[in-house]
Each structure stands twice: as C-alpha cells, then as structure tokens.
Length: 210
Image 1 (cartoon, rainbow, N blue to C red):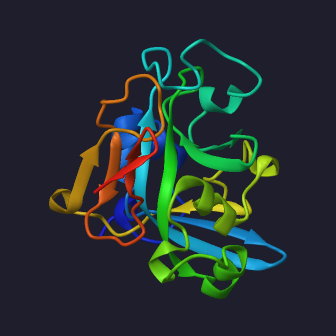
Image 2 (cartoon, rainbow, N blue to C red):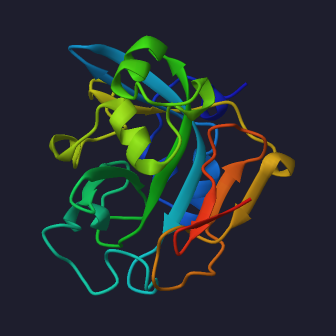
Image 3 (cartoon, one colour):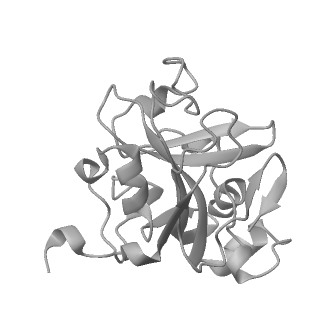
C-alpha cells in the first residue's frame, strides 16, 4: 500500500489543488478533526458541495476578490469559514492553485471521535446520526467560527486537520442540486454518501424533498 492511500494521515496540499468538483468527490469519506481546550471532535465527511470561482454564479468569488472571500483564492488546503444569515458559520476546504478561486462546502459528517463533546455542543440533535447534519450544525459540533478562517488543514500541528479516509466506491456516491443558492440552482455539484443518516434533507425554497 502506498502512502497516498494510507487512511489517517494528514492530507497533502497538492492532493487538494484540483478542480472543486473533483475535490468534492475525493473528500467524501475523509475526516476533519478539530482540537481545542475542550477536547477533540472528529467527523467523517458524508455530504459536500463544490463551488468554483469566476465561472460559477453561486460562488462567493463570482464577482471577484474581496476581504471576505480572500481565503477562497488559495492556496489549496486552507479552511474558509464564513458567517451566514447573521447567526451561523459554514466551513469550506479550499482547492485549486493560489490565485484560482474554488472551494468545497462541508455539509454533513458522522462523528467518529468526541461524541460526548459533540453532543454537548448540539444537545437538541435527535440522534447520533443527526448530530452533525447540515453545514451550520457541522461547524457548531466541531467548534469552528471566524477565528478558524484561513487555518492550514495540511499542517500536522494545526488545531483543525484534514485526514485521509477510507475510499468510498463510486457506487455509493450520489449527486444532486446544491442547496439554498439563488443562482445555478440545478447544477448537480452536491455529493453525498448514500445511506448515511447524517446527510441533510434536500430543500429548495424552504420545502424539504426526499
């Protein structure tokens, strides 16, 4: 077995410097680990969404570079955290090369370490599979906020690290429209692992769809 496929190692930057759609597919099954004074929470990523840059009307970078989206312009491997609706944080893994905007929104995960801490951060979650269901809930469970924006996920000493996971076969991956975007609504760049209870319910215009 080569080092490239060893599960559990911190991912390399060059492995993430790819098109966001390809990156989104590869991130399924990877693990995101967040360490703090409270303890460690680690989740297996089961749902993601790809966002390109200047050619993607739904992207934060579609209209150009701003202080808010600066991290999304690279280099790859950094965490892009933004505030939405005046109440939630969402987290993304940056891809492509320095100066080329693109990232993958992390939508849901299965908690594989630190379940008690994760539950204490989301005490109203219905069950184990729902603790990290949805992008805002996922960041809450991991304890991520604006202070984590720009962290290097490829640094072994970073408090937030991206770890290589067990490969997910193509037969277990599904795709569909992205959620909550006003533009490019039908672009099927949301990907998830079929059968995971942590995958969020698809919603458009506030109505849930199975």
